[in-house]
Length: 151
Image (cartoon, rainbow, N blue to C red; front, top):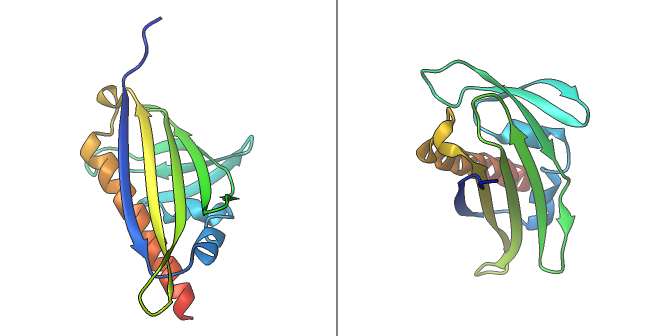
């Protein structure tokens, strides 16, 4: 049985908030809302069903998303998730939030998001779109965490 080609995307961003409060944003179903262009439509068998437009010219697609709550490791918080939908590659992701001391002693978070998509070439999503989506997710997470810290 031939293996499917896998595309790996890795993006990172420094967030001006501590990893614990940043991880709390990912602990509930609202974490899905941080993905750009996603609207929750249902909850089925432990997965969240969302609608998203992955191609600006294309139709909205329904996507089943399964998210694990962040797990604490000795040096970071790690959350994993998967998504799948018609015309989309089966994708798994890992988000790691690591403590970074900043000058002046203010804690920051180094966020690293790694996505692995199967058969990206045969889907409605391309490498550029997947990378842009990952970067926008981290920007949304940073905005939410930094706004929460400032409150």
